[in-house]
Length: 319
Image 1 (cartoon, rainbow, N blue to C red):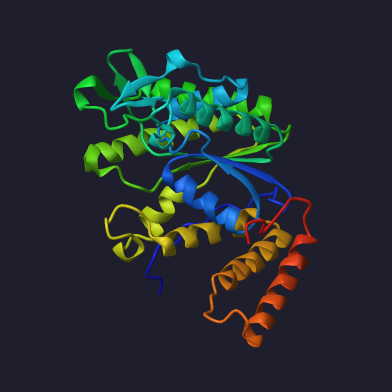
Image 2: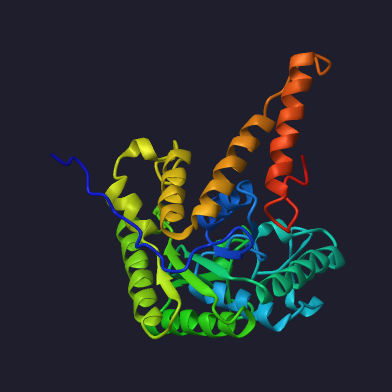
């Protein structure tokens, strides 16, 4: 007897190799997946604009990265004695205009360079809702805790969603490698502040728009991450204490499913060993001169060196 509905990720004909470059952008779930790829010592960049959720803002970010379009002073606003870009996450906010611009433009430069060599793109949409900053009549990625009275909230129309996704694909295909694979996911994190019914409507619009657009392109795929959490892992033991965000067990389960479908055998082995090494690196001792600890470190360094011989890029560089 079966006691759960398992959702599988379709086997990919093209596989992620150990030297491939993976760019990810979107919701906080994109960051969790990217963190695991980095832990596995693959080459990845995540969210050069910080965490962003809606397709309009993600397209805006990709377009700026594609164009290497640096931000200028007039594009920032001030609030609470900080200089802010409404296209970016709050982590870019500083008290000095040049510092905010430096942080933003450095990430644009890094992102533009990385995209040109990227083999894989992972885009995670979180919501169809968007806020308009009334003083500038500008659609924004983040409200930066500015009072609600300065914003108007609405759902992006179906046309706005499909246009944003379509143009995102065009920009990525233009700047990335010729056979770049673009993977779309919808975040399983429920935006309960929007309301449960409104959240379902928002997610449904995203899923519909993604499927409609990617059917027009080669090398664009939908990963059923939302469906895995909603249907396969439909139990609150797979959530954090807030009952909204998937916990580590759920994230690792999805990563395992993703890897099974998209990693080459060599990549699977490479990541598996790197995860073990990362775990071993967490080991600490009160006596670093203990012969057993010295032997342990020597053997661990040998394992790291074996892994380094497998790739051209730098790995375990912070350890």
